[in-house]
Length: 453
Image (spheres, rainbow, N blue to C red):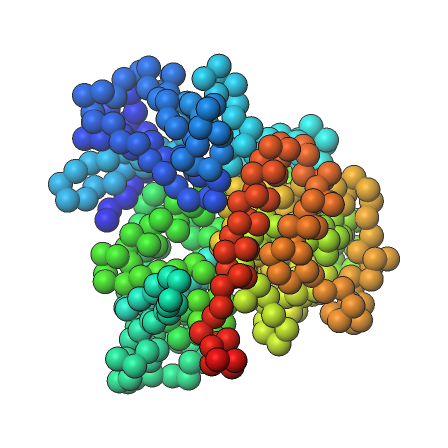
C-alpha cells in the first residue's frame, strides 16, 4: 500500500486509473463506489453520484436515494498492484441537493458552524489517540449451539505463541524490539498516514501484549473525524498485507488492558487557544465550563451513547482498571475522565477526555463532545461546584455502565445535541444500539457455562 496527497483532479486533468468515492455509514465505517477514469468528469465533482442510503443505516428503503458529492480538498492517491486510485471523501445530499442531516460529516460540519454562530470559537481542535491490538491468528463463531473466540499473537498470547523473547502480558508499555514485535508494522503505517496527509505525533507499544498506539496531531473538528476513519482503514489494510489482524474493539481480551480513544481538545479564537487561564489546573473559565459540560452529559449517559456506543465498551469501563468510569477531572491523573496533561506549558493547557473508545462513529463522537462542552459554556457550568474535582466524586459520580442505561440517559438528556443531531438520527441510533444490546445481553457466555452449567 502506497499513499500520497493528490490535487490533480478534473480541473488539472485526471491522471489515475480509478476514482474511489468514500462515504461514511451510520456506524462510522467507510463505504465506497469506484469509477473508472473513462467516466470521471467535471459533472461527477459538480453533481456527484446517486447511491442507496438505506444500506448505510440511514434512510428507509422507500426514501433512500442520496447523492455523494466529492470534496476535492480531501483526496489522496493510492498505488497498489499496478493501479493508481484516487480516493476522495464525500459529502452527501438528498436528491433535491439539500444537505442530508443524518450523514456523519454533515453533523460534524454543522457542529463546527454552531460554535462559530454562538461566538464560542472559530475552531474546535482535536487530537485523537488510537489504541488497538494486532494478532496473527483470530477465530470466532457464534450460533444457537456454540460460541467461542480464539486469538494468537507472537508476543506470547495464545497456545501456539509461546516462544521468546517475551514480557509479562501487561508489561509492554513503550517496549523496544525484540520484545516489541510490531515496530515495523507501526512505522510502515505511520509513514503511509503522513503521505496521505494525516499528521502523526508519535507511536509506541501500549501496556498489553500485542497492544499498540498511534497518536495523531491536532486537527480541526471535521478533518480530525475524517482522518481517524482513514487512519483506521490504513491500519487494517497494512495489517492484512503483513499477515496480521488489527482490532479497535474496546475489550478484545479478558483481564487485559482495553483500547480507548482518548481525545485531547481545546477551542480556538483568532488562531489562539482560549483554554489556558488562572482557574483550577490552569484552565480558563470557558475551559472549566466546557469540562463541566462534558462531565455532566457523561454522568447522565447521553454523551456515552456516542463516545462508548457498544456493549463491548462496558467490558472496558469496569472498576479497577485505568479506564475512567466516574465524572472527575484532575491534572495529570489517568484515572480521571477528563485529564489536564501535567507536562504542558501554561499557555498550552488543554483537556483530554479519556472515557471514549473507537467503537464510536468518530464524527458523531467528536461532535457530541464539542456540543456538550458548548452547552457547559452557555450555561456557565462550574465543575468545582458540581463536585467533579472532589475526591468523593470517584465513588459518588459513577457513569452508567451498560448500553441499555446509557441509551435511557440519551432519551432523557439530548437537548444539547439538537443544534447538529436531527431527531430522526437520534431515533435510528437508539433503535440500532438497542438491538445490539439485546443481541449481546440475551445470549449466554462461555463464562456462564463455566460457572452455572
